[in-house]
Length: 316
Length: 306
Image 1 (cartoon, rainbow over the protein chains, first blue to last red):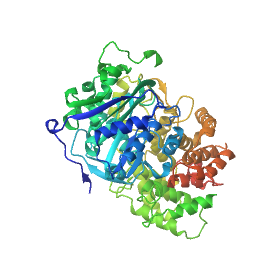
Image 2: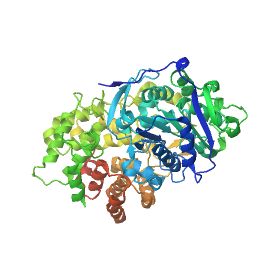
Image 3: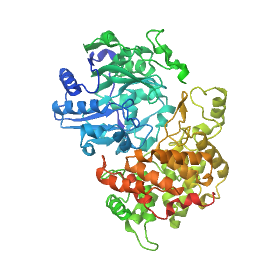
Image 4: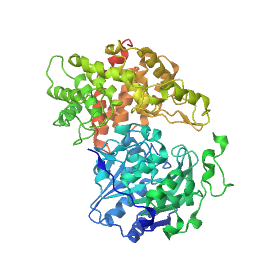
């Protein structure tokens, strides 16, 4: 029998969210120190708990421009262990390339987090359990999910700061598509596209409910993301205890409007806050780190400033 | 080397007769089918192979009433793993009825992009700026009611080459459309990825796995320029391949077209000790199959199409 997903809270009964923005100029910086100090401020309930880090490991990435950077993943792992987590796993399931080992080797993850064999879980082929959705945002009534994801005490979505050619942006909510097992749904997980990308994002996050989000915005991607866009240095890590609030803040940093991003606007009714007055901002202000990302013509309505650049059509 | 892989494979068999994707994982159809193909490839004619027999019992017991197989226990519909299950049964005539039932399901399973209305809509709306693929072709989907993609199309095409499929109605037309779809979805310059050769004008990056499956599925047109270009691409990147799954598949694909490279085999052997992750059941089976001197498991694509 499929398991029922947890109940949802209406917006008025949810506490304010906390989101921190930290400047990190490059991947050679002491990211572990920045993350550890920031995570301590959140006083997260991870002592003695099993933590699953869910980065975005979508494709071969030898140049480090597409996937969550290994330095950030390693720093997060180290930080959660220092905060007392009993185990910290790293898991993802690419939606377009089933050779996870090739992806990991291309980005040299094991040089940062060895030994990888004991801590990495390929979410595409892990054992699975069915979850029945409470939300009916999409036509999906249930999906299989990896057991490690459902059994972890604390799940951290760790996307890269990127635009997306179908969803507008891909941040901590869209990143959870990677938790849907390819071995059940294929490469790509096309059932999610046919169900509607935006409503499927909502259903998946309402079911899995990541506890925390850390966005790697040190170097992001703009334009035709999530894999064919252009490198965009933004020099920030954005993290918080409400993935919707973290994504909204990230979108504002990208010079875009969160309320115009369909899945974010929908998520605000069920899963978290997008209104600035409900988000307690820690660290840098959004204004100080704002760095407009180019978007495809199809997503021009997302821009805060209508005069900010679109993806150069000449490159098409 | 293949003996070591086979011993490893036998050691990973679950009590229920199936295999999971990794050691200690629940039995699933996909790794079980691959394990059975590999065990049969190296079995001695007439000899009783107990793990093979148990595996076949697991596989056949998991077949659904409609002839399909699901990717995970309890899945409400069958899916692409039906092709792999059928492939594993090809060599076992005692299961011919189950095989035929699976092949029938595959032949009847239509992707959503093959429907008349959908194709008309795609032709009426100009999407050439987004992607340039033709709506005239279709193949097979990963899961029911979704679109055609490269890998499931390859698996279905390969297994529907079997003589057992010869009696299926309308099969040549479906194979023809799938054939067209695969060539239409080839990445510019050769090779395949999941099925997006170009998005917003940017050429898709080919991948080893889909390229090898497409080259196997399209073996009957081995002399076409597209096949040669794809083999050239595979050869050009072979020194950069590091994972055992891709190394094994590249060796299999190049070998089928007579472009064997002994270095790939050596690197595959040595990668076992240096691997970042434990080898999956699929990596083990493909590695074993890569070392098969007379790959009988690929005879299905060498024989005359059904």
